[in-house]
Image (cartoon, rainbow, N blue to C red):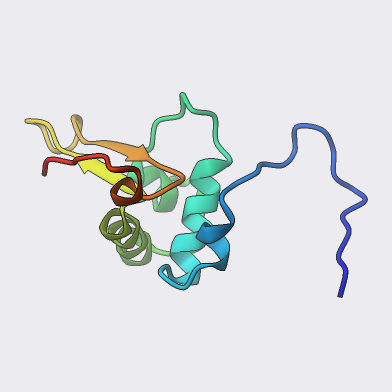
Length: 110
């Protein structure tokens, strides 16, 4: 089967590493979350709560537990690195990598 998207508009798509969507190391939910992260500008900040608990703009139908599980899956696979500061609510940062950190030789301190 050949699929062509003739409605593609400039700036309305992103490119990502095929391993993310074609690999078997992530669940479909984690793959979707990862694709969402990769579609955002590099300057975007991840506020985990906004993904599931924003009344005005809820980004996913999945609930809090599902999103947290998917994030933990991405962290375990090396696609996302979580760094907690002193104030767990305000100082937690997430860094997203298109290629898992262990495949890039990046050392990560917990």
